[in-house]
Each structure stands twice: as structure tokens, then as C-alpha cells.
Length: 132
Image: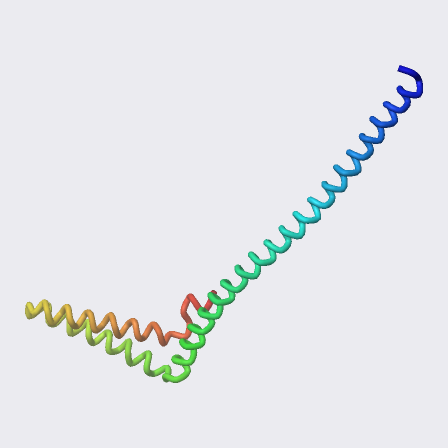
């Protein structure tokens, strides 16, 4: 090979290397940009879905709290105390029914007592759920 052919071969190899390097860098840059855009779009959509589901859950909780507050405001505080007194009288009635060996009546009185206590608990304005 002559010197000119060697220089031409070296020039072609260097030109191919530069061409390959430019193509590689361009493809790498385009791939990163496309991956970033796709990742950004996917993350945005996932965030929107998560936010919508969280807001729906929070809305249900707030609605329930508003309903309970309206119930408390509609009823007088004396109503809660009346329900507690009824529950105590039902406990006394259940004990009396047990003393006369009427278990079915005692069971019914205790069930009614539990219902009255449940209703009184709904009217309690200072529950642990509202304090949190």
C-alpha cells in the first residue's frame, strides 16, 4: 500500500468513527428525551388517578362527619342523657328478668339496652374519631 492509500484508509476509519459517534450520541439523546416524556406523562396520569381516588374517599368521610354533626345539632343534648337513662333502666330490667328466670326477656332487654347505648354514642359530640 502506498502512503496515500494508508492515509485514505485512516481517514475513512476516523470518518466512520466520527459518524458512528454522532449517530450514537444523537440516538442516545433522542431516547432519553422520549423516555423522559413518556415517564413524565405516565407519572402524571398515575398521580391524577391517585389524587381522584383519594379525594373521593376524603369527600365521603367529610360527608359522613357533616351528617353526624347535623344529627347532633338537630337533637338536644338532653336526648343523649335520656338514652343513657333508658339504657340503665333496661339493664335493671334485664337483671330483674334474670332473677325471675325469664332469660328470653332478659336477652331482649339487653339487646334494647345495646341499641340505646349505640344511639347515645352517635349523639356524643366528643368522640375519638372527631378529635383526630
